[in-house]
Amino acid sequence: MPSELRRAPRRVVAGFGLAMRSYSHYLEPRSTEELARIFGRAAEEGLHIALRGTGNSYGDAAIAHRELVVDTAGMNRVLSFDREQGVIDIEPGVTIRDLWTQVLPHGFWPAVVPGTMKPTLAGVAAMNVHGKNNYKVGPIGDHVLDFDLLTPAGQTLRCSRTENRELFHAAISGFGMLGAFTRMKLRLKHVESGFLRVETIRTRDLAESFAIFEERCPEPDYLVGWLDGVVGGRSAGRGVLHAASYLPASEDPLGAARSLQIEAQELPSRILGVPKSLLWMGMRPFLNNLGVRCINAAKYQASRLHRNGHRYLQSHVGFAFLLDYVPEWRRAYGLGGLIQYQPFVPRAEAPRVFGELIALARKRGMPPYLLVLKRHRPDDFLLTHAVDGYSLAMDLRVTAANREALWKLGHDMSEIVLAAGGRFYFAKDALLAPHHVRRAWGDERWNAFLALKRTHDPRGVLRTDLARRLLGEELWGS
Ligand SMILES: Cc1cc2nc3c(=O)[nH]c(=O)nc-3n(C[C@H](O)[C@H](O)[C@H](O)COP(=O)(O)OP(=O)(O)OC[C@H]3O[C@@H](n4cnc5c(N)ncnc54)[C@H](O)[C@@H]3O)c2cc1C
Image (tube, rainbow, N blue to C red; front, side, top):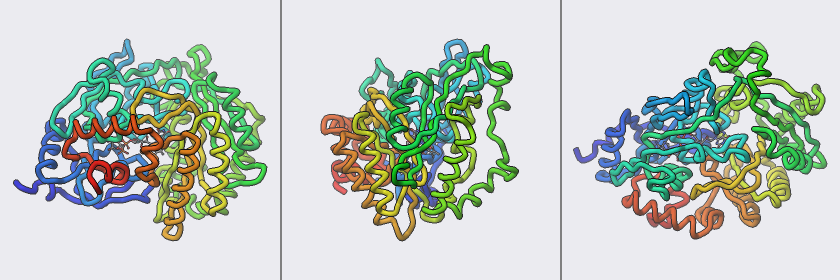
């Protein structure tokens, strides 16, 4: 059949922020054999593939306009789970939710989780995600023992720290460009209780937010800061930080046997009496500069109800997946959606750089509606985003009227980040240009990555819209 894949059904496929979309053929293979066949056919038919998990990358990392999106979320069996060693062998479409529900009752938790439980393990490995504990345990890649990678050239390669070492360190962080993960083995974190002990710390401005991070790290197991990106003047960068640590079984008021059960973890189905599924509609009228100013002020004032240093117990799920409390919250941003921009900046420069970025976004009338501050440490992965420093995730609203100005803002912010030796994150990107990534990772790393791409995907089959934007000129001349 000359054009089998081109007859596959088509649909609109979006990045999580809904600001970047593609109209693509869509296939959902259920086995490695089926996936291998699709790779072979795509090469013959001259069709390019975007691998996709559950589409939680904010921008264009898992879409491919007029091409083929191959969704591996349906390959989702747990192959084995060693409850003694805390090691699990899984297929690529197993989600973070599948993982914690399977392992927590046995006293384990994924060592690294993003702020939502919806992503697949293939998606989080491709982006090498970090958690609120990055400064302490590194990214997810540090907890992967080995994986099988199906390359577009048709080979399945076992990769680990001793076998196909270079590919191991490049496919993790390689944003789905070098092959498809078809199996992965992970080491889990042993936990004694289903609870964390959490402490909240209110900060008056950006300088104090950084001072607390510096003072506290690396003592708690997790540390994260919510900052107010709308308020200016002396209060710019004020916020509420959360420090959390694993609870020993001896301090668990429910008893570990109960707190480790799934029922003790689930998020509430209603908030203030409103079904969770409707909450985003109530948020919608507030997602403008004035509305967010009011919400942020209320949130900050509410933190004053407790004395600074207030401590309480919270489930792992409640602490880790705050953004899952309000399903479909992204829809509150309206038709244009949102983008997220997350620069990573070395420690010494981060306070100045993040201060400048927030001020610039405010000055241009596009303040970030959500700001999240995290501490990071370097790791061994080829296109790692982490540096010995900090990241600031900025949620920016996109409208038909501001789109051009927002992309210009992104360009100007990236210049500031690069001048300070910073990097970016492909899972959160919509704004970067090719020269930004070369400068961010340097010629040596970037050329090594392109060389691996040419070796394992000589026909350029794996080509998302993100790849076309950032690698297109150099690899394919377009
Ligand atoms: C609310 C929210 C909070 C988040 N919080 C964090 C956070 O705290 N920390 C963080 O690091 N990230 C965070 N993220 C980003 C998210 O973790 C990543 O974008 C992750 O990659 C999403 O996984 P996914 O399964 O949805 O993959 P997708 O977004 O569908 O794809 C991600 C990448 O994986 C590739 N891919 C998919 N399947 C395969 C496969 N089988 N083999 C090889 N490559 C494949 C795709 O081509 C793409 O490049 C957050 C995202 C959201 C929406």
